[in-house]
Length: 209
Image (cartoon, rainbow, N blue to C red; front, side, top):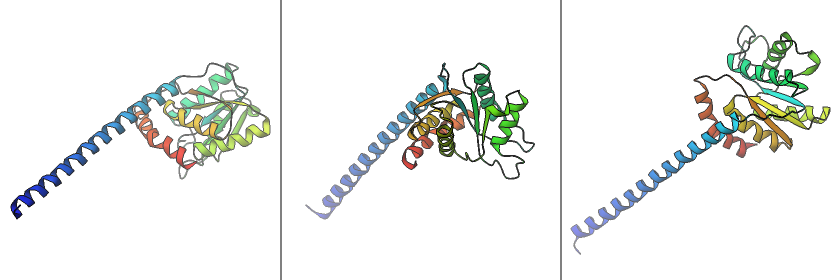
């Protein structure tokens, strides 16, 4: 075999290898996209399927509080859903959990939610305020302390629909047995961003916590 034939054979082998790698990567991308679609459909279905029973307490997951201490529309939707559960007699207490809020915020998220509920007629004794719930895990951890102290055995987590699956996962991972859910009744175009964000977020929680 002369040098020209040898070079042709090597080039063909290299092209075949590149073609194989390219085909594998295309299949991998398609599988990943299919898995993401299945995942997003599942968490949407799970988040929109509300629990119809009762529980000891509803836990509201925080969101943005505006500069004037009013609740953002997303957060108000969550709190209003918990308020409805309370008025229906399906929970005895409401725990409002959030972080310190944006820089320059006058009040933390938990305090803003508590004030809103009290303005709506909920007795202060029936609202549990938590301002250390900077993320879903910390909210679940703080609730675990409250549940142990007050002997609560069941909870309805309240958040936007796309956030529900991750909430229930981390609450159950902290050995909170009877975890149910109810999602906000209001929807926004930005929910699509939240839904897409949940795809990596859930797996991050599975690996990290």
